[in-house]
Length: 231
Image (cartoon, rainbow, N blue to C red; front, side, top):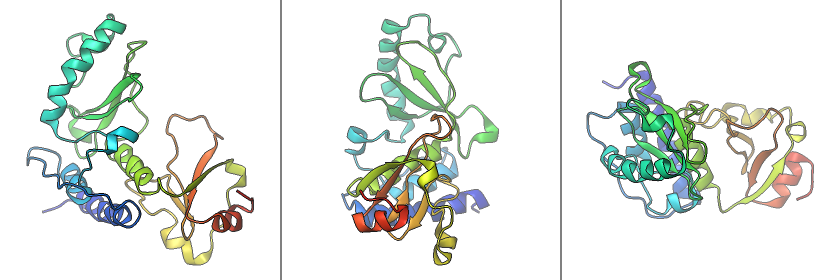
């Protein structure tokens, strides 16, 4: 029987898949993760599927743990060349149970899950590995939040986008938008629907307070009416 969290993830992931179908209707292959994987992760990827082109533009990696295990030695070789004293290279320096969440396209490092923590197994935390410094800071978001934020970016990549200061965002949403102002409260709690076809994109968890936020919109007139600023 599904847990409440798993059911919530499955429901929001289905809506995220529908958003992809509507705005980014590229073919997606089904993803069937093994029963040994966390149920919520299986539900998420079962709903959204996979497109092999996503990692070429977005910070995503196929969720298969065996694929991650095959790829990690190559990444550690690069780390050893650039930062031989990195704690990630020492015994126990990285989680023993993991899957890669992202390999930076510019060669800056990679991100993987920490699935050694049983209390966070349903939505594991993330470890960043930085090639230049060798550091391994924890990310300020969970695996499912990371993946959902990137898939929202996939779904709205074809829209207009503008950076907006937090002070310029509308303080009050229209009453008819109140139920959906946070379309994915569990998977992407910082994403907001500002108006029909005007989305406040996920916040960067590493950004400083007051940093500019990205707004995606289908039509310039919708942006101007919502933000009260011309594009």
